[in-house]
Image (cartoon, rainbow, N blue to C red):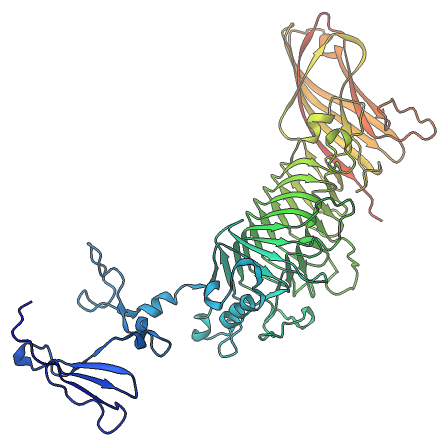
Length: 575
C-alpha cells in the first residue's frame, strides 16, 4: 500500500439521532456517536481513490454485544470458494446471498435453548421449551396448513451428552428430534414419583404447558408425522414407560435404545414398559408407525398395546432381558367397547432378535392379521434358566388369522432328541409353525421301536398342555449301506385334551425293490410322553407333555442318515 501522507487525525463527537445525524467526514476524519455508541471514519473523495464518497462504520466490541449481531451483517453464498463454481442465482454473476445468521439457523440444537447436559442438572424445562418454541409456537404452530407453518417443521438436534429430565416431555405433530446415536445422546428419566412416561405424544389441541388428553383426539388433530431417532432413553427407576404413543399415526422411530431397570428383580413392575401404544377408537388410533433398529432392554414388557392399533411395523429391532417382548390385546374387552373392538391388527414384527425373554417373545391375546416374520429367539420362555428348564411357549397366538413365517429358535437344538426334560412348544395357540432348516439324525437296523426324536404338544400361554396339534414331517432317508433312498411325509394328529394320537406315513422309494418288500422295512410310530419323559399310559395324574417319534428298521445291516423338517399347526380354543 502506498502511503502518500500521514496527517493529524481529527476526531468529532456528537449524537447520531440529533439533527441531520452523522455529517460527511473528511478523509481519515473520525467521529464518535455518543448516543448510539458507533464509530465512523470518512472515506475521502473519489479523486483520492475512494470508491465512493461517504462514511464507513467501524466495528467495535459494542457491535458484538447483545445490542448487535455481526452474523446478520455478514453475507454467505453457497459454493463461492469452490474451484468449480456453483450457480446459486439466476446467473453466475448474480449469486444468492444469505446472512450467516440465517445459515446457522438452518440447524437448531438443544444447546440453543439452555440445556446443560451434564447428567446432573435438571434439563426438563429447557428441553420442553425447545419443543414448544419450535413446534408448538403460539405464533405459528407447526401443524397448521400454511407456508409459514411448514418452515417450523425443522429438526431439533440433540448433541452427544447426558440429559436429566424429571417429568414427562410432550411431543406434538411434525416434531423431528434427532440425537447423535445410541449411547451418545443419553436421556436419563428420573421422576420423583409416579408412573408417567418419559415421552408422550400429544394432539393439535395442545398448547405450550397444556398438553392434550387422548379423549380430545380426532383423526384430523391426532399427533402425526413425527420423527425420533438416534438416542438412548433410560428409565432409571424401572417404574416408567419410555414412549407413550397416544393415537400417533404416520411417524418414524429409529436407532433408539430404551433401557429399563430390572436389576435384581424377581417380580417385574407392570409399568416398566418400553413402548405403549394407545387408541381412542378404531378410527383414531396408532396407525402406520414404523420402528426400525430399535433396542429395548431390561423392561418388564418391551411393547404393549391393548387397544385397536393397526398397521404398525417393528423391523430389525433387538429385545433383551424382558418378562415379555410384545404383549398385544391383553385385557382387551372387545364387543362394543370403543377402542377395544378388534385388538391390535396388522402388526408386523419383522427380523427382530429376542434374547433372554422370560416368557413369550410375542403374546397375542386379541387381534387379527398380525405377523411375525424372520425373527430369532434365543433363551426365550425359560425364565432365564436355559432351554433345558423351558416353561412357556415362545410365541402364543390366542386368536386366529395371524401368521408366523421363518422363525429361528434355539429351543429345538437342545430338546428335540432328549426325553428327560419338558419340551414346551416354540409356538402355540392358533398358528402354523415351520421348523427352521433341516435336522439330521442317524438311523440303523433295529427290530423294536426306538426313540428317534420328539415334538412338543400344544399348550396354553403358561405351558400347560391343552388343545390339539397336527404335524407334517417331511423327511428323506438315504441309506449309506444299501442302494436306496426313501422320502415322504409323516402325518401326526394329536388331541391333547383326550390323549389321542394318530400317525400315517406316505412315502416314495427309490431303489431296487421289485417285490416292494424293502420299502416297508422302515416304519415310524408315535406316542405321548409325560412330564418326566415316561411313556404316557393314561395312568391317574399322567398328562401328555410331548410327542415321541419312534422307528423300526428291519432291513439287514442297514444304516443311513435321516433328514427332516416339520410344520406344526396347534389349535387352542380361546375362552
